Length: 336
Ligand code: DP6
Image (cartoon, rainbow, N blue to C red; front, side, top):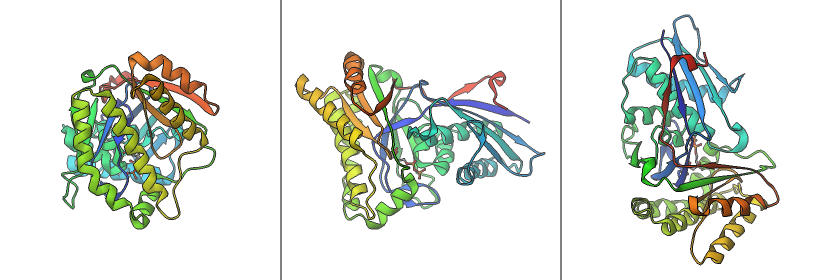
């Protein structure tokens, strides 16, 4: 029996995934681009396939996972077992160093870690593409966390999803000055999950298809901004794309509203900062929650941090650089 342990970090999208063409396989309607974070925020996951187990078990932050989380993990494990030609059930232990409920894409790092550790524990020499596909089955955005640096998820067009996986656009050393100032805000009430939210949007939003049609142009503009380390364009595209995703959420019925008053304060504050500098030096993006990810570069890090920490309702600030992607840990670090 082989145990494998990986440390994997979340990614934060600048071109967003919101809407599936296949709910079972987590196949998106549009491509997306993200930056994988460094280990300031991380998940550690250990996996062991064991012939003595009668069912898969998943312990998340010291507690048995909820049924829906287990179901998603089993989808990833089943794909790994099929590829490896094994039948053994698995024991999975996973820990985050950030609050799971903080809306920090813990599912992205979690399922990417499960894919990496699971594939190795099953004895597979999986390619990055295979790992990305395994991770995607757990959570769409997880397919981007199997790679470091700047990452694009190719939406693909096949029904079986074999051409829907992530590729690296540039490594973390391409733009090491980039910072994500993760600004944690009290969510207030329980948010609606991404999968359910996407289903409501694709079914009811009239603006949704317009957003999907615009996506190829946005992807090429974003690739270009990243390639040239063009901060102003990178930030402008990021802010506009975040607003556009939240616009189709709002255009859904019932409307899906993740941003709150504090999020709006953050937007005003960043825009004010940019006006005072005479150019875009910081840019926000929001996922399925009120927390902001404010991208900037090291030069402005202190000023932006101070600005954000002065906003009433901001609970915590974590600063992350682009990260290198999954890292295997030695056996003595196993959680099992
Ligand atoms: C808003 O990957 O959590 O963060 O595939 O249903 O698990 P599922 O959804 P998930 O969606 C995250 C969407 C987003 C934008 C993004 O990360 O691209």
